[in-house]
Length: 38
Image (spheres, rainbow, N blue to C red):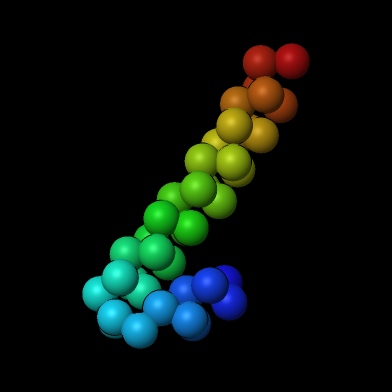
């Protein structure tokens, strides 16, 4: 998350953090989906 700290614009920083969280959530959902379908 250090990249977010380097972003000067607060709105862009928040957007970047949201995208990062969504990416992590998607990875978790893929992992859960794989566990359920196996």
